[in-house]
Length: 61
Image (cartoon, rainbow, N blue to C red):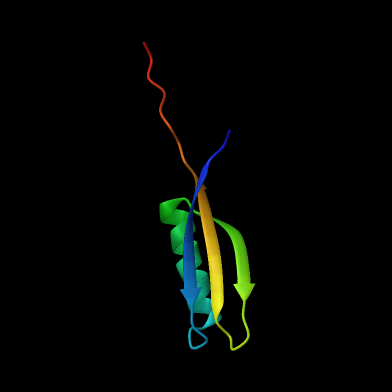
């Protein structure tokens, strides 16, 4: 079974779309996160859920 860990990022309405895109690109490129969900709320606040696989190393005997 694949397990994921999640990170939630929030951006205010005063942050530009290009800054948000750059932040998400950095998380994806350097932290191996992928976009799971994105929500735009009234007032312009954005909330983004990122996820990545949890890799468990199994012991070999």
